Image (cartoon, rainbow, N blue to C red):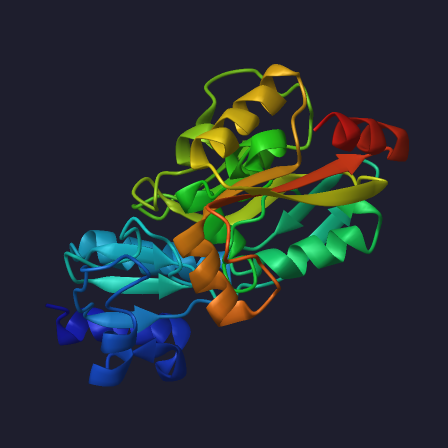
Length: 295
């Protein structure tokens, strides 16, 4: 349990408005999108800068209070469920895109930035951030980094770890370290950046990230393939890859999935076939046309 002395020290750091330990607040942050996991934290705290994060971690380290960093709680691995109680650390106040560097093709962001907001901001400048978790409308970059999130574009473009160039991290004792940087060939020493990506907040708290951007694809086309035979759909996926075509997305849906999605979203998916392949390719127009014809 969080004692009154520790509570007072934490409130001094962030103010009473950004420290919540009511039953309602604790209940809201007691679970994430993972089924069958729930555990009440002792409190929820909302810092607004890295200095506050450093002070919070120092206090919790000295007083032996567990810390659980949390984005939007959309993960499916119980990564933000406070199973040991303690403090849930949220980043809704640290949500700024600090820089979009068009010369070095990087974006520097705080952990509370919504994934889709970053994607829209860089695309407005003709750049592209490929990781696209299905929860990108509400998931945060900090959560994506801690879970190493992927998405439909992962087949061609990879997952979050492939786009994290550098991190600013606060360790459990309050020390601040910086890993990596903007250089493409930044290979000296231990690869601490990749060590933190996917660690679910167990090694430190990310307060800033440098992300790799690429030029936005010139065009894209989408194809919907319908199958009476699920095995044929699976073999088609293998055949596409065997012909050295890597689509931007390649999604398999069986009939029950099509029915559920169509019932909810009503996007025109066929529900009278056994399987569907949703295929998208992007790139220069001539390459996209050639690949889609071969597919």
